[in-house]
Amino acid sequence: MNLIRDLWIVNDAGVVLFSRVYDEKIDAQLFGSFLSAVNAFAEELDHGGLNSFSMEKKKITMFKEHNCLIIASSSPKYSKKEVSKELKAIANKFFETFPPKMIEKWDGDVRVFNEFEEQIKPHLDEFLLLL
View 1 (cartoon, helix red, strand yellow):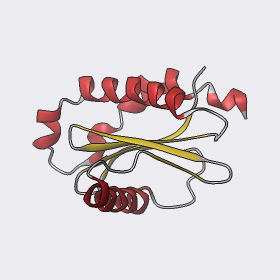
View 2: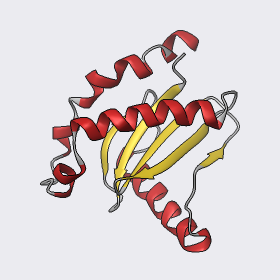
View 3: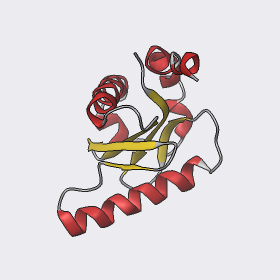
């Protein structure tokens, strides 16, 4: 079962390289910058960063890989372990498609990452059936 509703991939500068959000209530770049800053603050305090937090109707799960934050929202009824496993599979696919060296040399045009949505549809689309 696919558990992830929304997805953001954010570089160290807080720029959202890729996002796939069903009901966008806040600008993706603003959200990415905010979570990047919160994670940087958490890293300073705890030397580990933020890995999840919950709201009433959403849980945010995230981890850092290749200088990018990989962030997903899901229902709070799913365990962090379940969501993290699915998120890790998506991250692996992202870095296979866009190797870290390519991202380091990236010219700033986020459109190059748009093709990734087609590759991850199997990880995300089933969620619509659960709503």
